[in-house]
Length: 323
Ligand code: NCD
Image (cartoon, rainbow, N blue to C red):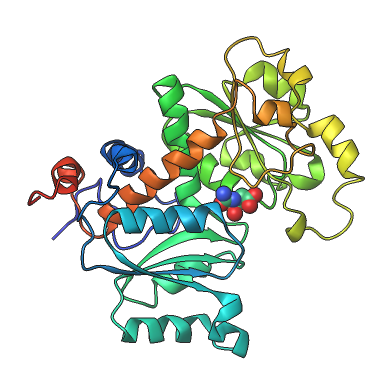
């Protein structure tokens, strides 16, 4: 039987392969789920009886906790595995780890991994649903989805908006997922950062390249400021963090030149005083904590849709009615 074109299929590995319709289905399904987190009792029976493993091979605060809250608020049973306390440190392969989890009859794996392609590799080898919570420098689809939901909350639309990703584009899975998602939804997308931190073929993705933050500020409706991924860098990418801040950092002095409304996003964790100054991060343009709130709703939507939930019955399912 062919699936409706809005359906996501088994896994969420990235936004590159999703249509505008599929992305909008996730964003629209996140809307009714937002309210669950505002309730006094933050729990609905949508995923009752489902078992989810959060398998994190790389450090994470926001993403891991956000997935766990989303799962728990939908009543799934969850287990968290961080590699430092798992058999991976004894040399077990990813597939062996996953097969052993499968043998305990799980339904879904949410995985973060340092290697680009790890989520797809796993998704092709196990029957459970796989959600990519970040794979190397490749994709971080739920982050881009929550970024887009936040932009839509502010501007009421995505289509036609000008969004610039600023900073370390080269190492950023957030940048790649944003580029794919935003272009699919009809935004104009630009990137801005030092040449050493831009992928050489970036313009081929259909984005504009700015060589100065000041130009990006003149142009954009949204700046999504990215963390310098110092842990993924060899020496030689940057002269110094202080110079980086002066040239590429987003400061309130630079923002004063913005011609109109300019929304500031950052996926976190922030290097305050490096890519973003504190007065900007805590200032009136920023919706950084709103992004974090939206992350839970977006992840609830993805969990719901991947486990077979229909977009138009999310509201009823949330109230415990038969969908
Ligand atoms: C991002 C990540 O891990 O890719 N953070 C996140 O998930 N909120 C961005 C980053 O680490 O800079």
